[in-house]
Length: 239
Ligand SMILES: [Zn+2]
Image 1 (spheres, rainbow, N blue to C red):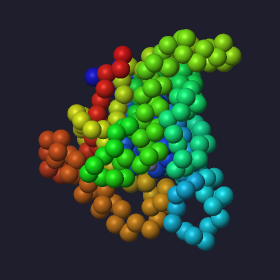
Image 2: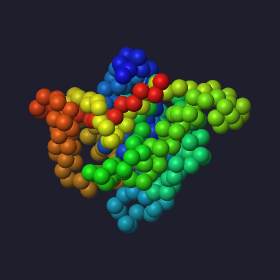
Image 3: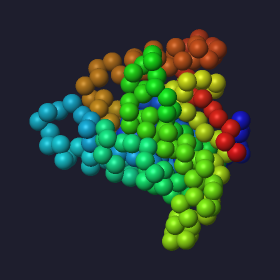
């Protein structure tokens, strides 16, 4: 596994606004504190989200971009790329692979965080179809598309984007969790980031307690001392 000192840039690829904040915002706050540059790539604008039937649906996408931008600021991230795919209808197409390979070649990250392409049989929300599609397309974009100069050759010919090899992938909620990050010190910023998604979390009265309970259980599963909080990942060597 790479030490954080070997990492200059991290690219986080997610399906929806708020995914990164539920799964990894505490870890990301630690990375930006350490001087690592973090970029978010959001495949959809979360335009099928929200709880307020009175709200015009066409207002949802711009609202959620704004909320995600505010949430990112809570954990030191200011570079967000929105791909604008329709929420709830994402498929792992060649087009999405090319769009993600483009972002990978532009950002040139050492480490990528992306959803697992696997269905989760314990917590159904982890395996949302958009998450699985984005996870599958992201891993295909990491290998082989971004690193093979002859894959999507137009990226190089027309856009001047050279091949790039991502050295490590972190899957939050992956099927074989093998790394637990202690986020006790950044928990408050994770909560602030989640509260910034007002259209999604505004109705959750016990949000902080819910998170504290879940992240304490994650810490216990990772063997951390009592009273600590953690986020869990499956880390893959992709060099
Ligand atoms: Zn999601």
